[in-house]
Length: 310
Image (cartoon, rainbow, N blue to C red; front, side, top):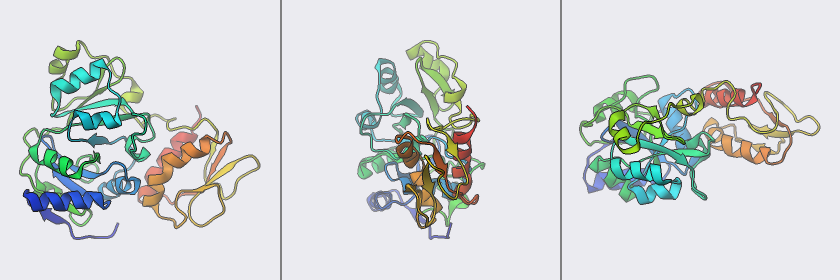
């Protein structure tokens, strides 16, 4: 990933406008929440979301939390039943994320949900985050704004120390008040998927006892066989065998191409959507070789899980 000039934006109307404009043009903006600083991109723009992984050096595509301004906005992207709406009303805005089924016509990039049929949603309480989300008027996917495996950032200085030159801007809102990532709950019945800024006991005062999370929900993407299409998947293929469809990469004859120009960011953005599209054809899928560098490592990780014995 080439170096860029990372702006440090102040928390005034001009800074907010600049941050919203960057998000709207497919760029990356780190912004404060009450938990930690998040690295935001338009959750509807697959290439922008792929840039999050590239900037962080994140080794695999895991579902990302989508930040929205209020409950009404959250309901555009997820389906809330009585239990999840009760939790949302009790703890939003705040340091709690809810995993709910995707709403029809949600418009989110499949890369945000890692190809799953659920989405993690949060309404942050930080006034600057709320102002940015309101001004942007769209869903923002945002993991913590730090290089993968490093300490989560709670100041703009932390973000600049780790990601300067790799993101477009950081919106400086001072130190985060909670300093611990959001609690995540979801599933039917509701289960604790990650402890965080809201205590389990406080949630259970509203919901009753939370269930024990299943392995798949607790760690999406970590199963040996995951993201698998219905059809068989053959990797590192330079051509389609009779009866197969071919998912290509780079200039080559194929049924669909992750990136005909060999761009790994574009390929990452297209991965889940094109696998779904080819799987709908009902034929075995052959996949061209993907370079195992940069985002290619994450793409290959997902393809290897999809092709694993079931």
